[in-house]
Length: 409
Image (cartoon, rainbow, N blue to C red; front, side, top):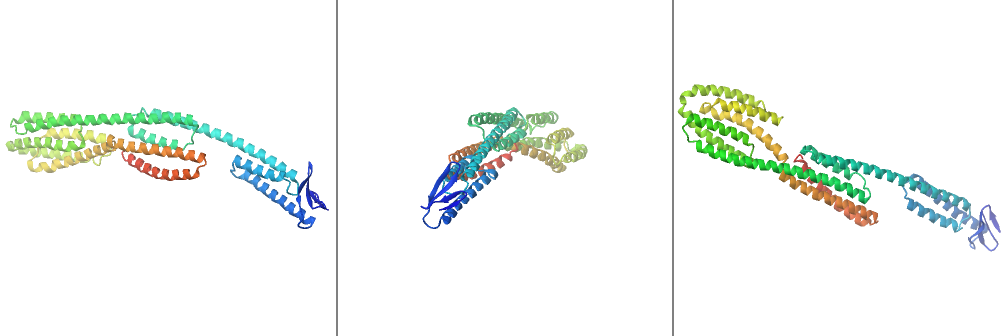
């Protein structure tokens, strides 16, 4: 018979291990000497020591889940309880018990950390909702629209809450965005209506101007043209596709009349030359308004200059194209600045871009939810397939968002 502090082999080849509960049979050995039997089962014990040490290190230094750690502990405990090794098995059981305590402590820490993160996310989303609801009443269409888009990006970066809470907050958030979009759409629809009204008024002014173009009642007709010009300015701008043509006809009718008057009053050339000098000074003043950096100020200044221009009267016929061309170039630059501002806030194109963006955003949000459910269900293949689809939709959404940004609101 051969023995060891932790085990022995009897004459029949049966191997025993010593525990606090007495000797336990380890196994039977017939393949060699008792010393070889003890050495073999001590190596099995050393293997258990190594495995337990590795598990202790994983629990201490990695993000091993409580579920996986518990399963590993139970697996090792089964091996220790099977008594198929020679060594201090009771010490191994103590280490495994401590591991169970460590895993439970870690489980509670993670639970508390998750609860804290949940509350932080809830508070953050509540703040986003409150800000979105405030922005929904704003009339700063561009700034508020940009801020709402930024809030959406912030929302997407926050973790999800429980389904009920998340859905309730998202409903309020989405409702605020929709309310703002409806108000903005109504605002620009009203602008469209105003431009249509301006077009109709200017059509009538053009008809009046053309009817007067053949008149030889110089004084009253010239006064009437001035009245028509004031009405033209007060009418506001028509849609871009009509404005230039209407202006050309209106101005052309005046030109016909004033050209005829100029021919009749050729003796007033001296006065007209003086007019030219004054208009050259006004044109120089107008040209100082370019480039347009403050549209409102430029428009007001040009209107004042134009009123002074109209009050001066005509210049010599041969000088008219050049001097009026200078003034018209300034006017056109201001009009182009106005048109650029209008293009940035075009409601129809914006609405189409917003509609597409909204659809793509809904699709991306839906895919995010499906991916989370697939991951939670352990369906990795489905989750990866959905992530590939998400990548494509996200790219389309990024392009749509970039296109929407070009409208500036």
